Amino acid sequence: ADSYLSTYSDLSLKFSELLLIHRFGDHIHWRTLEDAKKEAEASGLPIMVIIHKSWCGACKALKPKFAESKEISELAHNFVMVNLEYFYSNAEHVISGMKEAQDKLTGDTFNQGHTGDEL
Image (tube, rainbow, N blue to C red; front, top):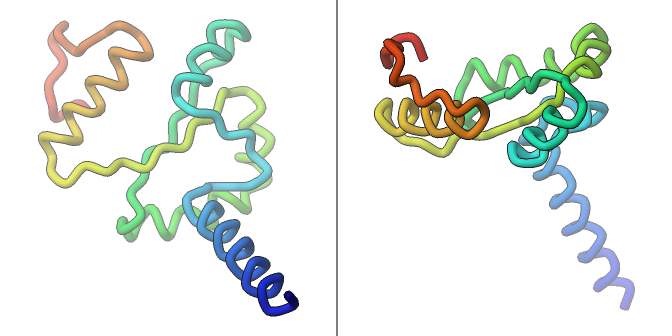
């Protein structure tokens, strides 16, 4: 029984660590995109979306700085915070996904003179 509990504890710890890998700060109240939209409509707060990829060197370098920043932690209260990891493999998928997210958030599908380079 002790070995089962030890294995369970190890797995639980590893799962917790895995969840934290994708975060940019435990102390920030992260929401899903759908929940953020509802909360922003109700509260009037703007949505701040942090978009990253697990393999991105710049994202990896920014993550601990973002998580440890007291200023960001304080400013986060002025936003509905969303943390998204993009799973797209090429530029066309990224642009398509950003257009879709923009449309979901604002209804603007970038048909009003915006170009892919602006995204």
